[in-house]
Image (cartoon, rainbow, N blue to C red; front, side, top):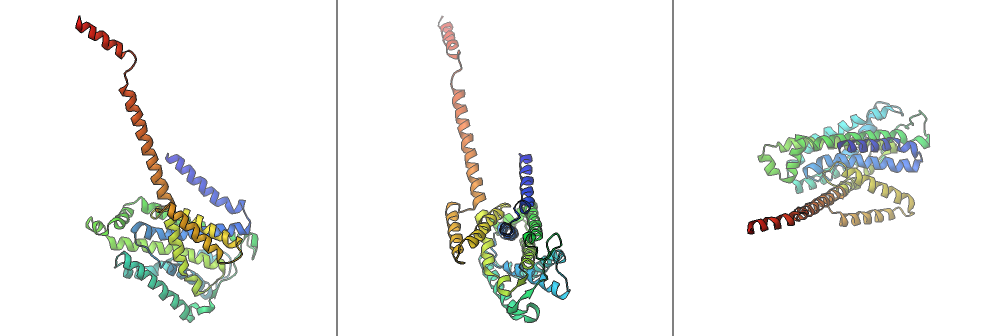
Length: 357
């Protein structure tokens, strides 16, 4: 069984690597790129919120911090276009993680419902700071980036423009998956799940709830910050209202809930479904607002049919199917063993005749 899973995962990885080579159409690769970006961001968000039960609605702060960190580094260090900004993406993620340490330490001192309110307040504070700290962020004018190049070294080679961004984002997604898998299968992850189920009981069992939550929060911010930096370099210009966007928080939370909160593959599946659908509707529908209606309607339908998310619901139904099939097999086996085998009746008759004689 493990071998089949390993083969399946390798096949999915091969498909992801070969996808832009097989479908080089810029429209297709753009949809795939944004789907991977949101998949990585939702997976990073899930490492904290999915495993601890603390719903964070302020991760756009770390998305924006990663974006602005990369833009400021490129501007102050006079970094030209090309591949050099990609090398600074992890540094931008570390900047976001550094901000997450004090912010997480403060906000995680409260419990779940108050924590949600604090994350929203922190988001609006940073958005206002991005507008007003003009000496750093350039205010509403925004910051620009050097012109990227494709992996052949050409500038503005549109058919292959998405390729380097695609593979950098894929690498971030694979890192998020690896961390999520480690958390899910480690003692540390069991502590996070215990916090999600009952934090007071987890504290009584010896789980260091404060440091555990803070570590997951910082890791989550690091991944989201790298996604923000990659996105910023892709769009070549950032502004406070786009880098710090409240819809980003709602989107990654919905993707994780749709696919399955607290699972490894759930946020990825939710992002691939919702972001691909959103991008498709945005391209196909004339009015820019209609795709939001279709996007919301699709989400409502799925949530009504699969309230726990796609992955947990499918796992639950598969488990029920296996239990039902096993019970049927046991019932049929019991009936068969209860029936007399051929010849039993004749032997019993002979024994009765011998006793009567």
